[in-house]
Image (cartoon, rainbow, N blue to C red; front, side, top):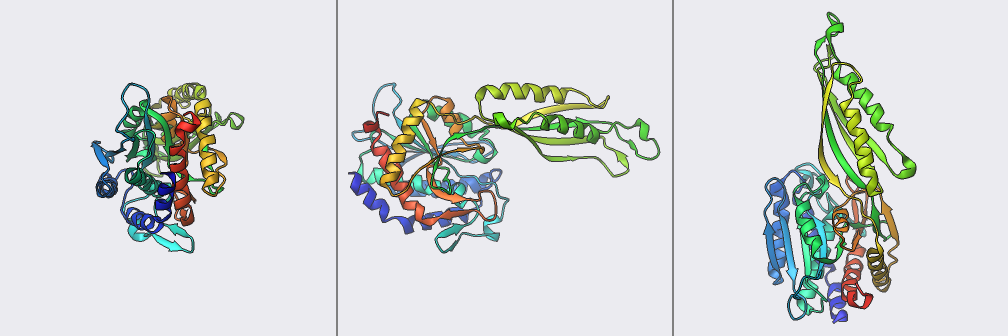
Length: 390
């Protein structure tokens, strides 16, 4: 059984590349619901062609969530115990509409380029082909569920409840974010909170009646300084106000201003401590007469390792070795949906997808020769779950 699956996957490289090309050349920015759903339609066609059952979980603002299922040998197990082997991935990218037209899928040597080629359309393709292999040959030690979400790059505002529901029934979670350039996987990630704050001041002519104005930009500057001072590199806590705007004209005391905050942290307990300090800074008026409000726009939980997750890593590491590469463990400051599944108690391993780098940039690339070995490693790990006691 294992050898049949591995041999079949070994023959699928060109088919994987063709599927990936179509996905990369389809618009799919997080705020482009129609584009993300168009990529979803490609997933749906693949599943239908391979006889794999698919459900669509409709979303109002962002891309729909797709849930594909390959039943275990003899049908789905009964009972309340966690059974599902969950393969996760997101269809959305960070790029603006029209990016695939400006920068379509291309191959140069042994690398592919294009928007979202590694983060994470290659991971989606890998999951699809691994599911097809289990549908074709059987052997899965539990139902294999493929979850294809549509809003990860903006914190999964609609997808998170769907992910958490799936995690409650998951025996194990493999999140197919891109494998690291060192061929490794990710066993730990920071959590992140993304906020926007608005400041109200009072307009006045900067020459004629300057003293009657209240500068929202001045208040913004004071708040940024205080927020950035919360950074504690030793604890892995970073604060970054990465976007600002405000003001009316160069000769007007600014009546409004806005900033956007990125908070990253390692330990779950640090989140509430730092958020309380940020909220106090937002509530305080450094310049009398200003007022400010803050809204959380998106949030990721940290990916932390418990003993069960460590067993999953050891299982995958051995499967990777048998597939020809060394899956070293990495910690990432980036966030991912894997933090949500880990927080729900599901043993989770992240970045098991094909190897790539320079995500979110025009130089993003995928190592094409990693498509088959990474698919084979994932299949091996699934087949050996019982043996590993997971």
